[in-house]
Amino acid sequence: MFLTVVVLGVIIASVTVVAGLLMSYQIKRSADVSHSARAVFAADAGVECMLFEMFYEGKNGAGAKISCDSEGLDLEFENKASFSIEVSEEESLSGTGSGIPRYFSSTGKYGSAIRTIRINL
Amino acid sequence: MMKQTKSLKFKIERIRNFLCGFLFGDKSASRRFGREGLRRKVGARSAFTVAELLIAVGLFTTIITIAIGAYVKMLQQQGLMTGLMAANDNVSLVLEQIMREIRTGKDFNPDSGNDLESLSFVNDRGCEVTYSFFSNSIKRSQVDNAICEASEGILTSENVKIGGFNFNINKKSGAGVLAGTDFEEIEIVIKVSNEEAAGVEKENEIRTRVSARKYFGG
Image 1: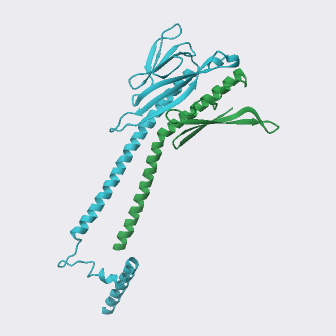
Image 2: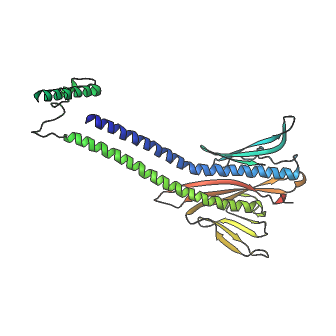
Image 3: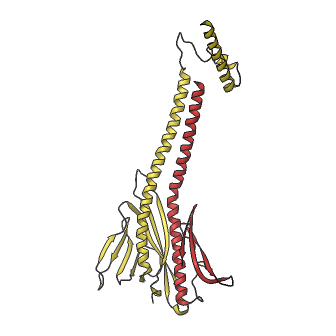
C-alpha cells in the first residue's frame, strides 16, 4: 500500500513537473511574438536601406554612395530594435571581391529575437 | 492446513521485513509499522487521524490552487498573445501598403520633422494621399483632383487598437549627378495592441524605415 502510494506520487509529481516546464516554455515562446515583430521590421528597414543604397549607387556611380553602415546613420531604433547588414560580394578570378554584391542579408535584433532577411541579387 | 497457514504467515512476514528494510533500511521497523504501529486500534476499526487528514487535505488544496492559478495565467497569456499576433498580422499588411505607396511617392508634406501625426504625398498615380492617426486606427484619405476621386477609409481592423501612429522624416542629400536632390527617409512608428480582453492589454511598438525611390525611376 505504502509503496503503491509512493510510486503513484512520484509518477504524478513527474508528470506535473514536465507539464509545468512545457507550460512555462510555451508562455516564454508566446511572449517572444512581440519581440519577433520588432526584429522583423528592423530587418526590413535594413533591406530597405540596402536597396536604396544600391539604387543610389546605380544611378550615381560608386563614388558618392549613401552607405547603410556609414557613421551618422542610426542602426538602432528608439524601441531598442536594431539591424545589421552583411554583404557577400562576387569573387573575381584573382580571388578578391569584385565589389558587386551577390547577395545581402539584413539581420534584425530585439532582445532574444533575431530575424534575418536575405536578398539574392 | 495449519502448516500451510503458518507457511503463508511466514512468507507475509518475510515480504514485510523486506519492504521495511528497503524503505526504512531497518527490518525491525516492520514491528513498529506492523499491526501494533501502523494500525491504530479503535475498538475493532482503524482510520486516519484528524491531523493526518488535515495535512493531506491542506497539501492537496495548496497544490491544486497553485496549479489552477498557473493554468489560468497560461490561458490568459495565450489569449493575449493570440490577440497580439492577429493585431501584428493586420498591422503588417497595413504597413506594407503604406510603405509601397511611400516608396513610389514624391512631394512629401511635411518633408522633415519628428513625431508627425500625418503624412501627405503624391503617389505614383498622381493622387494626393494622407495617412494619419484617427481614433485608435490608421486612416488613409485621398484628395479630389483631375486623376483621383476623394475618398477616405480606416485601414486597420476593429480588433486592432492603435495606440500611436507617427512619422519621423530624415532628409539625405544627394551627391554627384544627384546633387541638389533630397531623399526622404521616413521612419514609421506604430504602437499596436490587441483589443482589451479580460482586463489584459499588451502594446507593441513597431518601427521601420522606408525611402522614396521615385527619383531613380528615370
